[in-house]
Image (cartoon, rainbow, N blue to C red; front, side, top):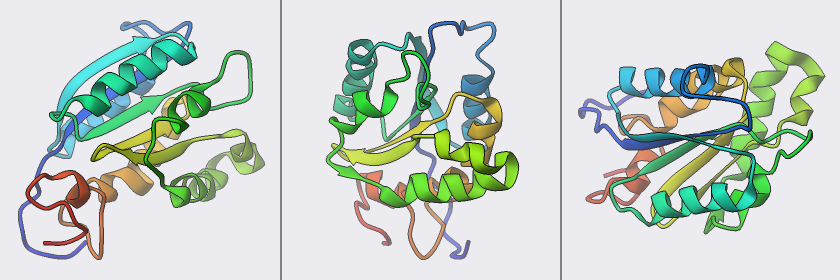
Length: 176
């Protein structure tokens, strides 16, 4: 990171996708909230929805349409088991997909979980000037994504480019 301008905190919504998690045991969603607030961002809202394509799309669509929400982080539903359907639900809502996000996440994750990382179908994209990242449901995966990618890419000071400057209204570009 370089540059001497001050960090501009973003407004971030967190969505946990799970048939079993509750507010009391949502460790992954809580880890994302803890990390984003520690980095100087603000939480718009945190919700939990079941692994249902239409409920998931409804919440994410609502946030994409809300000009106050600059970033959406989802956790869960990116695997191959049961009702995992986050990529199918979200991909159609994106204007542009961030191909490198899944690639980089799996590279970082490989160091921790080995070849099991190929079972992660995480993705990222842009929709209506909102950045959307869909992360696996494990707390470890959320921490890997935050520490290895999101912390820098959501920091308006990170150079040579970052996603923060694409969603900050007065910037709307990679650098100012």
